[in-house]
Amino acid sequence: MRLDGQTAIITGGASGLGAATAARLAAAGCRVAVLDINQAAAEARGKELGGMGLACDVAVAASAEAAVVAVQQRFGPPRILVNCAGVGTAGRIVGRDGPLRLDAFERVIRINLIGSFNLLRLCAAAMVETEALEDGERGVIVNTASIAAYEGQVGQAAYAASKGGVVGMTLPAARELAKFGVRVVTIAPGLFHTPMVEGLPPETQASLGAGIPFPPRLGRPDEYAALVEHIATNRFLNGEVIRLDGALRMPPR
Ligand SMILES: NC(=O)c1ccc[n+]([C@@H]2O[C@H](COP(=O)([O-])OP(=O)(O)OC[C@H]3O[C@@H](n4cnc5c(N)ncnc54)[C@H](O)[C@@H]3O)[C@@H](O)[C@H]2O)c1
Image (tube, rainbow, N blue to C red; front, side, top):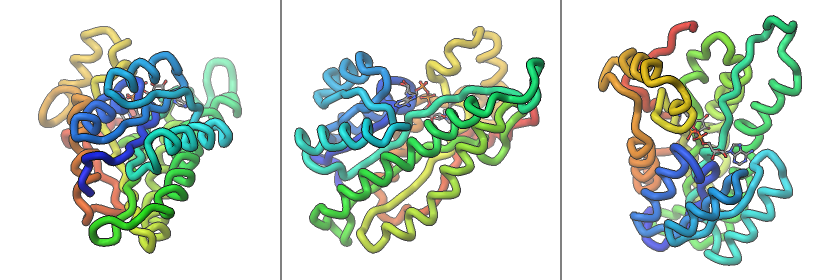
């Protein structure tokens, strides 16, 4: 779809891949709504981009419902949803203190998988009510999985399961929403230079980057955002998971 003037919701838009996406879509003329559990950062980012920012916990039905209503009231129905909110909490199944706490596993699934579905269901419901654009298109939903969905490392059982769920729901969601002209595409990023990685010592960052076949460096958030922009504008992309990883295949640890 043409991006100019469209309403775009970006979850996790206060940081990292989501923040870069919000900036890119705003530069392309979208009215961006930054939703993040970090209210102050969401508001600051939304304002800076000439859009809006608001607190939202993607894992909570009522919080997401209220946020989507607030966006619609100000900017009209969303045509673009980018699900970037997520957590990368690691933990071994059997660690020094015994089995992984079940609530730790649940939390990762709740935020990464159920949170993505939560926004997907609400935004899809708003999109199907809109007027069709060219080719009958009404909206596009971009989810964020991870290459851990395919090559989860030791300590990533919860994270990999959550991202595997995002991969798994992509095609059925695209199939179901096809009759409304709503597309669903997922990006599976490799290693990107975001606050998640910035906390690591510089030599660890450098060695992570050097392990990537080409280019031998961490991905830049704008490279993720550029793919989101392409997905949003290329109507023939649908129901697919796209790896964005410089050919990285993660080893067991
Ligand atoms: N950075 C990477 O290398 C990488 C690789 C693969 C996948 N990913 C995925 O990309 C997405 C973005 O990651 P990032 O690196 O930009 O991380 P980040 O930590 O910089 O940003 C994530 C954002 O999500 C927000 N968030 C967390 N829980 C939330 C909740 N319950 N409700 C709303 N917002 C919430 C955080 O406040 C933060 O602003 C995540 O889903 C992550 O799993 C990242």
